[in-house]
Image (cartoon, rainbow, N blue to C red):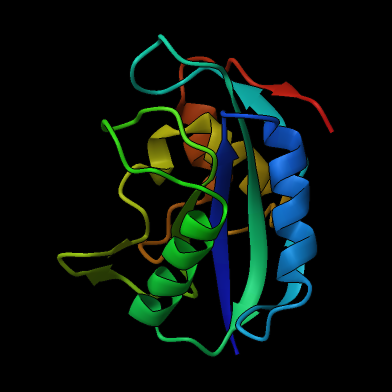
Length: 159
């Protein structure tokens, strides 16, 4: 089994309810096992500011799926939860990003692992530290050091 970390986000409808429903659903699927989720955090949108705040979390899980098969599975889940792909960094019912796939480094036209924005996003780093305080990226950088290097945080823990 491969250890993976997946960012969860939503800002349309009832984001907390959406993420809770997703977590309940993931307990029933064979593609992921030993699922653990961080707390939920409210954050300002990364892109256009004319949209609601996001609710973010990180899921730790194990899988036997290959990286691209896992990406396909995550995108299928987004679609099942009503995701419509509009403008970049726009509002969405559900956003799932593969952050880490064990210690793999991958650059593919559909997928980059570790996620390219991971080191710059407090709404990913703080929940990651909650789940795995000693976690390091494949290049040896500690998640805790990356979070400490960020200038400011606008996160509010809500659950």
